[in-house]
Image 1 (cartoon, rainbow, N blue to C red):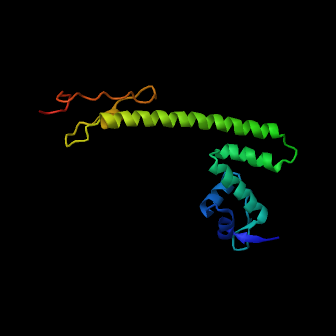
Image 2 (tube, rainbow, N blue to C red):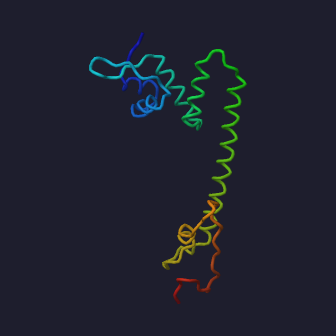
Image 3 (spheres, rainbow, N blue to C red):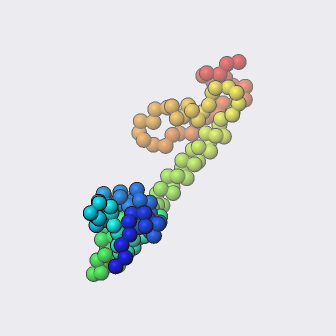
Length: 156
């Protein structure tokens, strides 16, 4: 059986030592065996689990869902139907996040378009960020003043 310290496990798994300690803390990885001096020691199976966790993180799964996936992975009697349902739910979350990001991008593009980008202090981007959005919704696009039109804060 091959044992390695946290640095070796980090190098072998592609997961930083800090994240390995975090994964132990949150229960994704069982607590490491310790030497008499208190150093963590990892087995090949731990490194394999760390690689699994890293790949799940790379796909954007949350820590709680990764915990569920690790449990399913280790349960040889699992139903693939359950695993598929977890993955499908994640796809739906990713689709919603993609829509949200595109909406943010559209709002920012509009605000950038509305900003004159000149030496005056008026800036619809700053004005929108400073506005009170009480309902948690995306900010409404700011209106760009027409050329020559003075708005609050503009000075002739």
